[in-house]
Length: 104
Image (cartoon, rainbow, N blue to C red; front, side):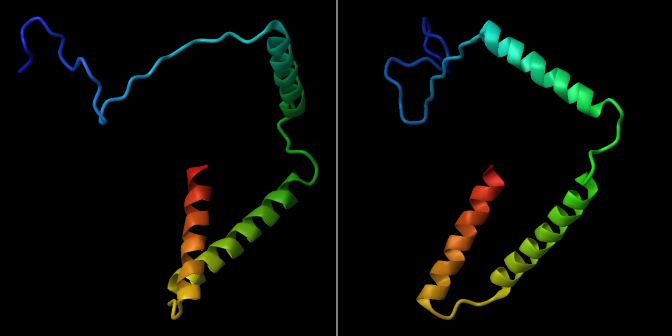
């Protein structure tokens, strides 16, 4: 129950489990705004006919193929039992790389 005369959740000295944030709003410069307009106009021009550019479908197929191979390797690493310290460390490095990719 809050003490009379004090705001709830306010404290004289912040503790380790408190976090203070400041939000500021910055407006882009006129040059940045103009560049953004150029990029949007270029995208609209590129996308107006609704067809993907030449080679796009092939690139997507190749990306999907590479992703399937990556997932297969990931699965094999996960299922392979580490029998040495070096093997265990290699699995840890793979797990760290996996966590970094998923975080991005």
